[in-house]
Image 1 (cartoon, rainbow, N blue to C red):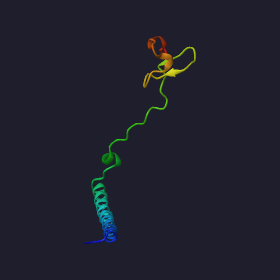
Image 2: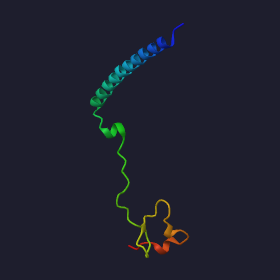
Image 3: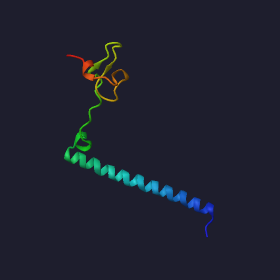
Length: 94
């Protein structure tokens, strides 16, 4: 029967072999992917899909508190100044 230290040494050796095999197979797979992309002329959008648009940075306020001037875009939790009140009376006109 093997000792604890011998088993740990075998484990480390196996872990190293596993990592070497993973690295070699990943390298081969990446080469195949690059060849396929080049052969068919794929673009990043073809491979990964269209980029998602980020959140809009300049959201137009939908509601305004006349006392404080605070605004709310209508998304997310209601602000305290609007709780229990009809939001339409605070709607910003355009």
